[in-house]
Image 1 (cartoon, rainbow, N blue to C red):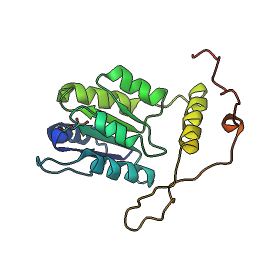
Image 2: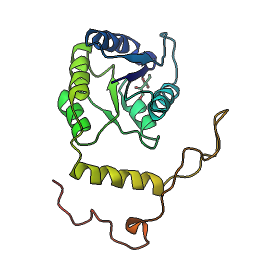
Image 3: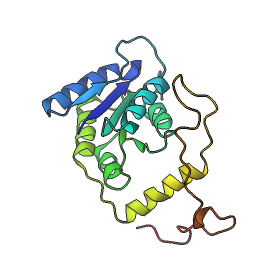
Image 4: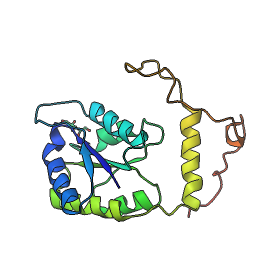
Length: 187
Ligand code: RB5
C-alpha cells in the first residue's frame, strides 16, 4: 500500500509525526507538501494528493489541516475520492469498512499525534467489507455523475471535461422515479 500524504501549515507538525509512524510500519508514502510553516491554502494540497490517488499511483491519502474539515470538503469534490475527517479510531475504521474511504483527513488542532497515529493505524488496517455497502457507494457514484458539470476552468495541460465520464441514465435518474433507497431500512 502506497500513501500520498499532505498538509497545510497548520498540519505540518502532525504530518511529520504521521510520517514517522508510517516509517515505523514500513509503509511507503510520498509527501505532497506543504514543506514549511508559511501559511498556505489547503485546497492546493488536497488537489495534489487527490489527483495522485486518482492517477492510480497511490492507494490512499492522508490530508491534515487545522480541523481536517477543509481538506475533507476539498477532497470530496473529486469524483472517486471518499474522504473522511476522523477524530477517533472507531469512525476511521468504519470509514474504510463501510465507506471505503480512500482519504483520511485529520485535524492537527483537534487530535494530538498519539491519537492521530491510532486513528491512522485503525484506518490503514481496516478492509472494505463490500456487499450492501457497495450498493450505497454505487449510489454515491451515480449522484456524483448526475451532478457533474464539465469543469469551466481547467489547469494547464488538462483537457476540458476530461474528468467527467457520465454513464447512461439509469432508473434512478428518471424524472419522478422513486429513489431505490427510499423507504428501505438502513442496516
Ligand atoms: C488554517 O488556519 C485552517 O483554516 C485550516 O488548516 C483548516 O483547519 C481548514 O479547514
